[in-house]
Length: 213
Image 1: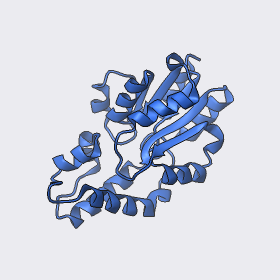
Image 2: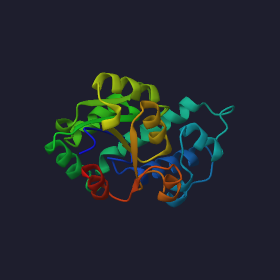
Image 3: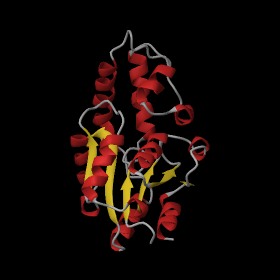
Image 4: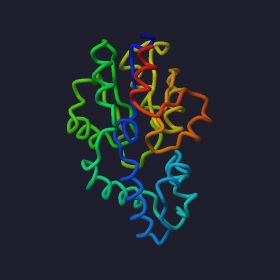
C-alpha cells in the first residue's frame, strides 16, 4: 500500500447524514422565514465555510446572529444524529485498512465532544489513533486542526491521504501536504467534486480498491 495513514472526515464521509442535514436546514429556514431546499439542490450548492452557504441561501448575518443559527442547527441535528447510519461500506473499509496495518484518524468540523460520542456509538474507536473535532459548534475551518493532527501522528505526508466529501476536505489536505480522495456519497455532488482535481469515488468499496492499489 502507498498509504500508511488515512485521515477520514466524519459528516457525509463516514456518517450518512446529508438527508438529516437538509431536514434540519429546512426546519431552520422555516424558523427564520427563508425558503426551504431539496436534497439535490443542497448537494449542488453546499460549500465551506458554512456561513457562505447560508448567506447565499438568504441569511443576512447583519440581522441574524450566526451563533444563534449554529445553536439552532446543532440542537436539532443532535436530536436525530443517531438515526443516521454509517455510509454503506464504511465500516468494512476501515476494518480492512486496520487489518493491513494502516493507521486511521478522524478530522472533522463537528464539535469534538459530540464527535467522540458518535465514534463510540458506531464502535469505530478500535480502528482509530486520533479523533479531532472543533472546540465549537459553528462548523468552521479544520485546517489548523489538521496541522496539529499531523504533528501528533508524526506521519509521513507522502504516505498519508485525507478522505472527505467536500471542498474543505481538499483544502485541509492541501494545508497538511497530503493526498486527497473524495466520496460523492455525502454533502456535495460528484460533478462539483470532480472540479477539484482529485480522485472522486462513488462508494467506499471503490475507494478501498484505490487505497489498496
